[in-house]
Amino acid sequence: MRIGRILGVELYLNVFFLAVLGLFLIAGVMAKGLVAFAVVLVHEMAHVYVARRLNVPTGEIELLPFGGVTRMGQELVTDPFKEVLVASAGPLSNLCMVALGIALKNYHIWDEQLGSFFLQCNLLIASFNLLPALPLDGGRVYRAYLALRVGIREATRKAAGFGQFWALVTIVFSLFGIAFHFSGLDILFTGLFLFYAATKEKRMAAYLFMRHLVRKKEELTSLGMLPAELIVAVESLTLGEIVRPFLPRRFHLVMVVNEQWQPKGVINEAQIIDGLLEYGADWPVGSLLLQPL
Image 1 (cartoon, rainbow, N blue to C red):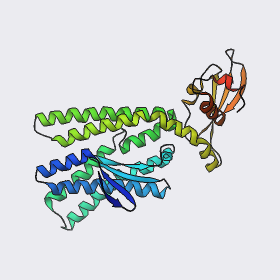
Image 2: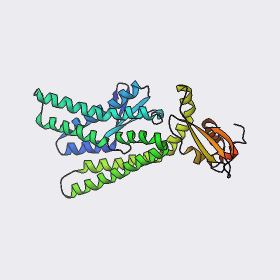
Image 3: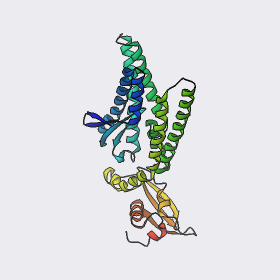
Image 4: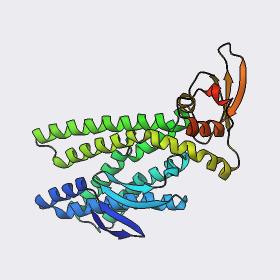
């Protein structure tokens, strides 16, 4: 549901967050709901601010119970260093708001009930988002760390898998909380949406990987140079298997050998990507040596 526009960014309220605000209204504590809304909004605007400073395109913001989703250019995922900076901005903004709240309390500019909730809300969102689980901010930092070691596709799958795990933990905890009257439906809604979002991220892994491969030429042209990685592959290996360990911010050279380990030639990453797009993922890398690219 579209709710407005701020600093040129369209704001949308996710149905799960709308349900949580409805629970605040029913409980007669709508002021707390508005505090939660403001905390989540500042969290997301921090992401937008840092992304714009790094020249990453930003789109609309969808506010969620545990933070939000800001639509950004896909190049952010393929640049682990930028992704870490943008992802870290959200939790850092929450910690800054905690410091601001404590300062206001010291100067007696404070409402005891709403002030305490403001601090709790910021600490909860910051700590929850620091979990190494997609689509949370900690998951994006974790993916960036893994991407430099196992590639974007595998990194996304692992971080999203953690997201599904923590979602199930949250759901089970909420069900116990509801049964024993120490938590409400808001935690259940959060767990359900987290599982949905993590599953969606996992399905996007292959697409993100292909975007990463296609953008590699642009990355090399933009930076002027990239560190090289040498891979040795048997000629029967398929192009789909060859590109799997390709890493961001590296340019790969593949030495192709036959079954007797005799070298047959060297192919660079650009040629492999062109071959992948032209002949498909099942094309043997040895056959690529015979094709005009």
